[in-house]
Amino acid sequence: MTLPDQLLLSDLLNHTVRCDLGLDHGPGLMAWMHPPVHRLLGWVSRPSALRMSREVWRLDQCCGLTDQQVFVRGEPASTDLVILEQLPTLMDAALLDRYGERIGTLVDFVFEPATGAIRHYLIARSDPRLPGTSRWRLSPDRIQDQQAGAVSTRLQTLDDLPLARSSVRQDLLQRTQRWRDQLRDMGDRAGDRLEGWLEDVPWDEQDEERRVEVRRSGAKEVWDDDEWPDRPRQRDEDPWV
Image 1 (tube, rainbow, N blue to C red):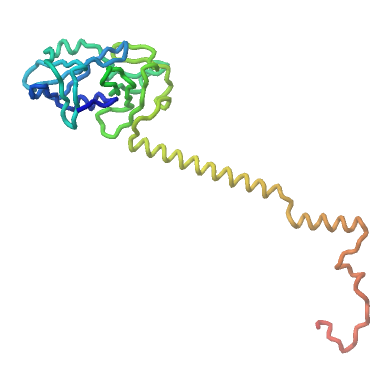
Image 2: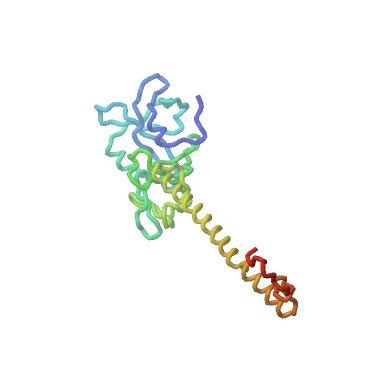
């Protein structure tokens, strides 16, 4: 069993912890991190739903990962909820723009299991518990300041960040925008063609200009009456034949 190069915190917490003795230590509960340097130190598991105690695992104790279980070496450190509530964390912190307005929430992050370094955070605009919501990537170098429950940035909107996962609504908005752009381009091309047609000289106007040039030059047109010889009409000749 090997560890991946990068891993989501939510994926780690969804796995059941099993030690080298084969004991089940329950699912993951929360992250143990050091926010100033954006590093994951370990995580907390809940061995029993009936007991108030929790178990803390160091990240270097993790030695393998399967579809449902994460395998660890050694023994955990036991603690309680009071101490866990005092641990610093950026999870569920409000993301603030350059004006101090909330534009999202830090709901997850991608880290390196070998070192614990956090590669980027995942931001949700709405309630992260809703299925299919969008996620935006926030790199640690874009964080200007950290406060209790809040992270300050120089962003204007979430659209300044790359989209990691789009929701159905976001996909629909993007497709609608692409359709609008295509229709706008088609309208612009049709307008350019129409302007080109209007700039061309009509055929009737060209014929009239040609007749004027002929009159000025003194040449006679083909349909001039002077070109037709006069001859007397016979009495019995039908004028309509």
